Amino acid sequence: MRVIFMGTPDFSVPTLQEIAAHGHQIVACYTQPPRPAGRGQAERKSPVHVAAEGLGVPVFTPKNFRAEQDRAQFAAHNADVAVVVAYGLLLPKAILDAPELGCLNLHGSLLPRWRGAAPIQRAIMAGDTQTGVMVMRMDEGLDTGPVALAETIPIPQGMTAGQLHDEMMRRGADLMARALAALERGSLTFTPQQEEGATYAKKIDKAEAHIDWTRPPADVHNHIRGLSPFPGAWTEFSLSGKPVRVKVLKSERAEGHGVPGEVLSDDLVIACGEGAVRLMDVQREGKSAMSAADFVRGTGSLKGLRLGGA
Image (cartoon, rainbow, N blue to C red; front, side, top):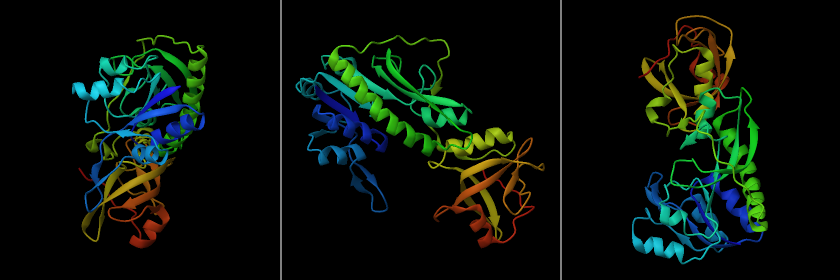
């Protein structure tokens, strides 16, 4: 089939590659424009942009689809279907209606739970024990279209958002390839979503990353793993009399009680509101990630220290 691919981050790349590997003709790739990045703030192409160029696919980077010229250009590709994976823009009706068979979206949750921008992080932060990937036909709502295929993914207690991201990325690529095969055969069917149980995964705000040690240990642990590795939940250690921001990348539930934020032992068991968590992997500001044991070896005993930051 003639396919337009629309995506931006690393998460989207395996699906693009899988579609190409199955012999579909990718007539155009749409992605977010290059943006300043790194210390030099040089403009950097998105991962999808780089991957599409590697496949020899023409790349388009409109900021939006308000201009009639951009809409006409999109329609002129005469695509059978558009595949959308974490593109980063809400698509207007003119774009949704342009491909003959519509626009298929790969979404990282079991809809209608976690519609919106950050379904992977929100599922873990909420303590969900399972999630999934779904292929849906897009409409003008926010992840409200009818669903065609779904695959459930368990969320073990120690899984981080980064690990779930990678698992979804792999399974999602295969699921979309199967959806396109069924669509080409004329056998892909769609089921409307129920509105009951709908939840919204709003974009992660940087202010949310600060760890609140007064919360129960389950909530603190879910908060840490839901924001790992990015943006990274953080707290402050007072080291040599100076506050130092430290990201916590991995934790586990632990035994212990104390004042919330108190370091209860030298293996970095930290008191929470009703129990404790143990920090396992951390990243000091401006440094590389390291184990908690290595961190303590560099600082000396921290027992009795009170963690904080605001």
